[in-house]
Image 1 (cartoon, rainbow, N blue to C red):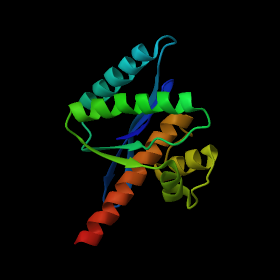
Image 2 (image 1 turned 90 degrees about the vertical axis):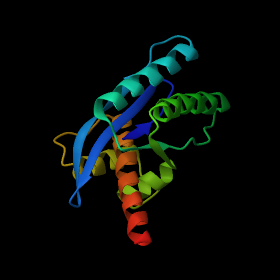
Image 3 (image 1 turned 30 degrees about the vertical axis):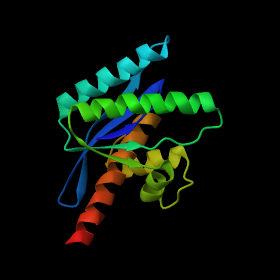
Image 4 (image 1 turned 120 degrees about the vertical axis):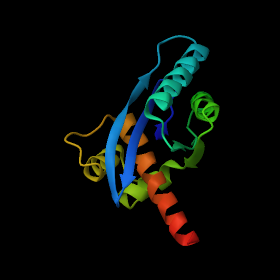
Length: 158
């Protein structure tokens, strides 16, 4: 499972990897209601908890927090990330974290790739008919990056 956290929109994506190929399972966006941050964080937590129960992932990967231009935005993003991490931790799943530049580089070959390039590569890698929504594509990209990173790490250990 990949998670692209946000206080307004949190993307999620599930992929399976077997016999050197990826299979798309599910993806989407959790859109939080207008209102207090506390309520939005509760929606993120509860929604991710329900998704984890439904799809039972083996591992979860999440995007690291990045320094936004606006300190308030960075704080809210960090809190959304915290709600997502709490949902994962409550299910005792292994969690890995990846910088956005690392995810972009893993999928496109460059850490400076734009959103459209990431969406296109997700579509190609998962053999999708249509380009997924931006936040869902980012979450799927995080999941793909995680599988590839962990596969390489396991290969090096053996």
